[in-house]
Image 1: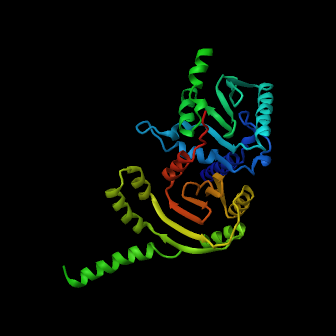
Image 2: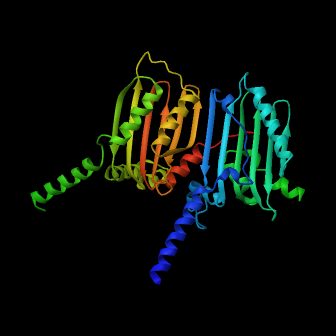
Image 3: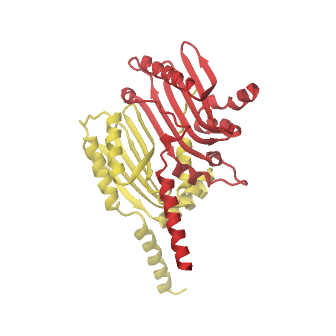
Length: 187
Length: 179
């Protein structure tokens, strides 16, 4: 009987592991599909970053209370992805258009835009998605700086408002550093 | 201490250094390097390639202790068990321009060998890509860095407990979205 319990426990653990590995992050409510970027891949500067849940979970364990570091803020995050493209004459209008399309798409769904900067040369938008408990489960940033770069960032998972600024500072997304302050003012 | 004991100690110490470090790269490293060069379609001459084992890394970490102000580097070195490095010079006359399709080709090759990228970038004529193992059990135990510039190709494979190395790589190569 004990052997049977052990076998059941092992099989259960294996199922949990298989299930955990097969979760598709693109189905997460905080995931944003920015669209096909192949038209921009010929830019002279392209950077892509993908940090998935497996990696983030392990990195998050690197921190403890006595030694808080960047990795503690990754706890609960399932995906960090960033696409950055240098803007040139060919891609400038297309990238600006893409940012507008994403803005329309997110504004028409359950995403909330919490930062909006728009001038002739610059667009910066920060969006968050909340669950029923008003917890942030997704964050998206789009940024366009004429003659420089366009960036698309999506962070999926449970994001602590108090750590968004840190996240922005550590990952070089200054738009996020003012989010906590702005959001608190609105509330 | 008897002369024979001193001799034994010297031989053991030398063996420790020589057998675990400063020897040629392993077959898998060589295979991946050949495939990457194949994808790049450019001729390269080997400037040097070697592997360094844990003993040699420990010795080098002593020097880091003395020389570096940055304690973090020393800590990272202590957790590395082996490093394989290859530096290859582009043959004069070869004129392949780095672009995203090249990065995609390298990515396909690396994927087939069980690696996944965390950062990849094309900048001017250069390519940088950082890969970790796609196997969740091995994810933080090995990292593969490819850097292609106008003049040379540098490939580095690092093995060990690489949490610190990977977190450092992520922080260093952040998104840099300036407002």
